[in-house]
Length: 426
Image (cartoon, rainbow, N blue to C red; front, side, top):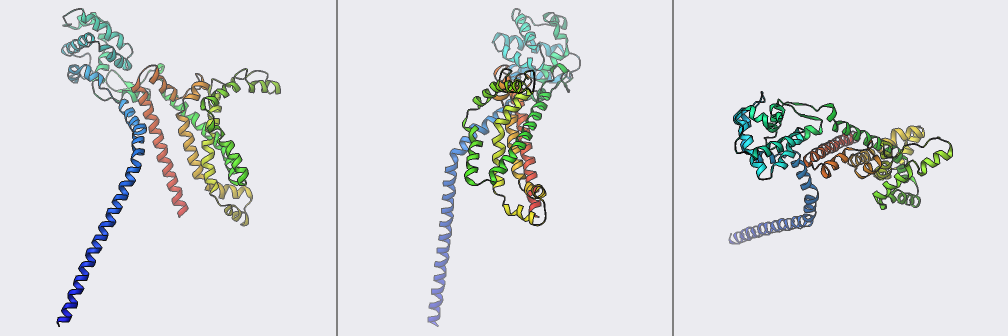
């Protein structure tokens, strides 16, 4: 009996030791896994910081600038509060007008009015001259206008509600006015959203032109790239590598050099016009530069490799046995190519088209140099607001709309690819 108890005690002791060693081993594995995760995070931390500094933060800053309107509420804080009492009917009360005139005189005295006037002038043309003129007159006297007649003596434009409506519209710290202007819309005298006058409707046509040109460039690149990629994927390795070097050669040449080369080739006294005249194709020199045609030609040359490479990577992974199997089942070469080979290349077509289209809608240097007035794209207008008009809010709104288009294209592409994968799996 004592022997059995001794054996039982030893078994219990052994089980305890096994459970302790099992728990210790589990904790060691957890500790090792945790250390591995920490090392992985430390390795990718510099990359995350680089992406945040160079990509994420600039986008966030751009989106913030597209709705930021802090300057007007900070410049006219009391006016911002009292303007809430006005409902856009007629003119504001004299009490509201006096509050605004008092702050207007203060802003003129502390030299901050020009910046505020420039911001409000974006909403209503002529506001800068009105505010500066009124501020200068108020600064010469200590008395504020006590009735509408005295205010109108300062400037007759104060009798028009649209100037007061612009001040009320900009009283909020955040605004959609930049996005409305980017879509050729605005706030009217009643605070409602309406279309811009026809003489100021610029951006919708420019967006339409940009998307149309980008679509044309993408289709031309696809038609030209598909046979080249097919040839690359089916040639012997030695010849395919040589042809691939020719495809990649433009990447080793400066974008500016390639663009200026097309200017030399396409200009009225250029090589192409000389060849057309010499061959008798035409008797007059053609305008092929500083227009839409020149922009499309130059951008197709620059973006063609971005279409070839995704197609080539997909075609290279397609087994030739599929094509031979279709032929053995009685399909003609054209039917086998259209119904068997081409559907397998659709992921490459989608990736190449998406990459080419996204790159083309954001091009700036080539349209600026080759496009002239008729070949400009929306990116050139963004650059104008950034560098010339200094209307960064408008530039940010235009960039935000382009970003929304890009995200929508990525979403559609993922949806289409997901549906195709489901069909193939089924």
